[in-house]
Length: 168
Image 1 (cartoon, rainbow, N blue to C red):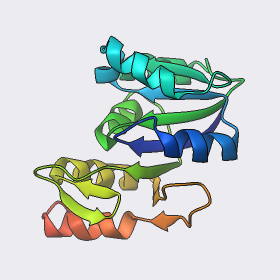
Image 2: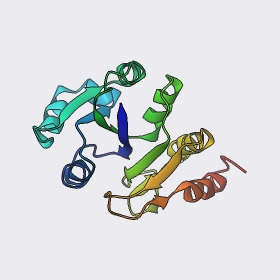
Image 3: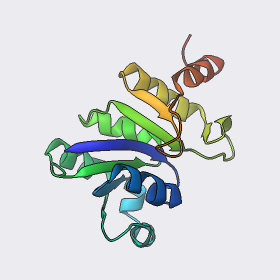
Image 4: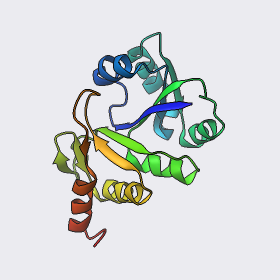
């Protein structure tokens, strides 16, 4: 299995994914990992409508996705894994899945969140999750499209974690 990109994007599948990432890195399968979406037939239909017919789409809850990745179900695929939150990635790691790098594509502003970058708004739970990812040796980088410069967000997260007294 070739995991080409692991991405957090609260919109999951949209134009940047289809027009930017899929065409540039030639993904064969998108794996959306979300307990919420796995239980919502309407969201599944809407997401499937956004994916080109040449790309497979799998929508799994965290437990099933963890099991499938651990058992090399996607062994022959060039895989893009999409999450809507860092908390879901922590659950995957707790289930034994390992990641080297995570692209932060979009976590948009909402009530109770603080905007750190134009595409990154976080609350304390997000920051705690990002700190956990960093402590697991996972690179956190941000870019909307593959041709954009990679921006390492780890220092931004550490500063916010200090501001929230999550780390010293």
